[in-house]
Structure formats: C-alpha cells, structure tokens
Length: 211
Image (cartoon, rainbow, N blue to C red):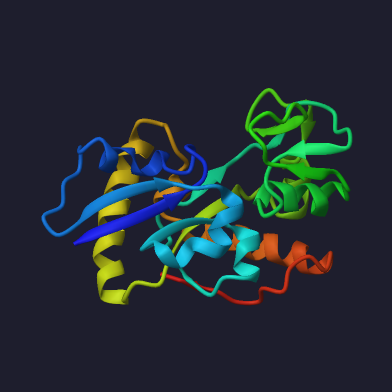
C-alpha cells in the first residue's frame, strides 16, 4: 500500500529520515514524501494520506493527530528585530506564537526571497521560548504534528513504523524525545498553546483526537 506524506518544512521530516533513507523497511507500506507550501495544506490535505500540519490549522481541519513524528523544539526565537513583516506563513504555529506572546502585528511573508526576521531555534536575537516557558511551565514547543484520516487499524500499523524511525533519530540526538512520542508533556504543550490562543481570540479549538 502506498502512503503519501505531505510536508512543508524539511525540519518536519527529521523524525522520518530513516524511512526516507530505507533504514526501516516495511513489507506492507511504501512511503512517498511530497513537499508543498504550508499555505496550501489547508486546501490540499485531503489529497494525502498523512500530512504535517501546524497547530493553528486545527481551527480549520478536522483530522486525527498522531502522537508520533511531531516537530518539537525547546528553543524558539527571531533571527533579527521585527520591522513590518516576518518570514513565515500566516498559518504557522510560529506566527501565532509571535502574536500570542508578543502581541506583534507584523505581516507574514512566506516568499522565498523574504529578507526580514526569521524563526530560528538557536542564535536568536528575540526569544519567544523564554516567554512561552513562563506561561507554560517550562514545556517544550510543538510546532507541527502529523494528521491523517486513514482508518484507525491502518494508522496503528503506520504509527509503529514512524515511532521506530523517530527512535533512531532520537538516539542520534537529532530530535526531541517528544518527537518520538508526545507523551504527557507533549499533550500538555498542545493544551497550553490552545489555551493561550483562545485567550487572544485567535483559536476556537477545544478538543482534538490524538492517536
């Protein structure tokens, strides 16, 4: 069975590199990775079996969420001072965090030639993670998760493959343990994000289905 996986940022698929590099092989599934623009995921996600989605997209997309393979970071900030715009998609978790934590009104620019401040996980000039940790009890930040509407019996088998792949990456120190399995901390991070987001009237999400 062919399984298509859509993503918009190469950092998202770090947990899945062993699958891409054939370090993990499955008799039942062949994985096909497709890179698309983050702004397109909201409209095209139904074309794919699995898809990386930012947290704000859960306001618009009714989907199951896998507890494995998420993009999770401990640090997040901006590479430079903010002027009128910031290099990111309007649907990105990073952009929502900027509005939630700093109250910024910067305009998102997702074009490749954007020359404004970018979101980075080290060597940043403006920290978002410091503010986040004060609000969310030192929890890591979940930036994107894998969504799917495949049947549960199929997803249960795919989850095992993704977890095995992520486990290899975790053992190499490439990804966070929460990328392998969200666990309690990962789930609390999601809860805190949406709680803060609802307070700012930017989100309407109150529940979601994590497998």
